[in-house]
Image 1: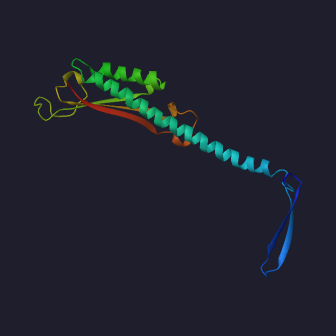
Image 2: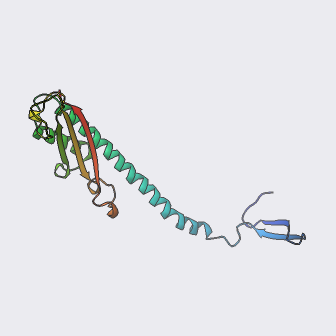
Length: 170
């Protein structure tokens, strides 16, 4: 038996009094616009979910790109002869090239933490030119989320994405 729209289907079942009753349905009867209504209700929800997944995927990707840029900048920062201004400019350029953010929107924070064996400097500072062997050079980059988002998302305004890395000075 082939069931197509308009085919009558009989269903025999027992009711609560254990009497047989018969129900007849027509396949597709009175359901002409149901699929369209269901699609109209489900499609916006599905699109919002998909756009949310894409947007959060973009945020995670940007965080990874920031971390990679900072790691590359930190590799250059731990070399002898590096200066804070050069490394800051290099990290801003790397972030601009990989993420596509204007260099003015990239905040770079460089911190040098002296090793316990270094007797000349004991306080944290940001001057790479006076860093000594085994000092911990940390770089942290912060970019506003609204500068890298694919869609204008109002509720995430003010959220910052960060990437950081730390290496010992050579």
